[in-house]
Image (cartoon, rainbow, N blue to C red; front, side):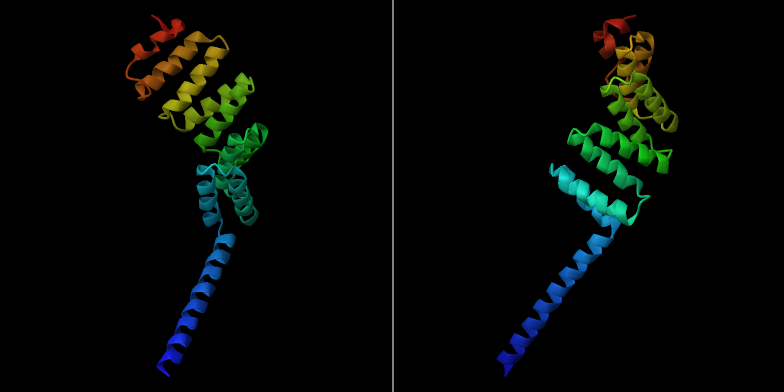
Length: 180
């Protein structure tokens, strides 16, 4: 009789565990935050298609999910689908006009497409939102440099140094145009 109850108890535990796992999976499939986090984990592993699928589901559940658009843009970047990345950064900016990271990343994409004025505009907007992100000054400085605007390039690169991107302004002396 004890053996019978042990078997019944074990079966009950197994059924409970299996049902719990199914419920957890169902929650994950309907929870945009869980989908976002899982998508980020896939992206970190280089599984960009799986990441994009998760971001798509999160956006389907919540069409105003800024972080899902942004992270999907990052995944598209890694896949070399730059126009899709720009589109997602643009959507993230429409939903949150104070998202400096989206402006910076879209600016980088524009810079790589030789759309320097758009890139500089995005970097400038990111700096207006958060003037303490050294990387944005680097990006804008390099874009000015590509446009032949050497004084502006040096000014931005110097500011990046002041914010900790290099040990000192002396590090910029390698840029011939930044020599005083």
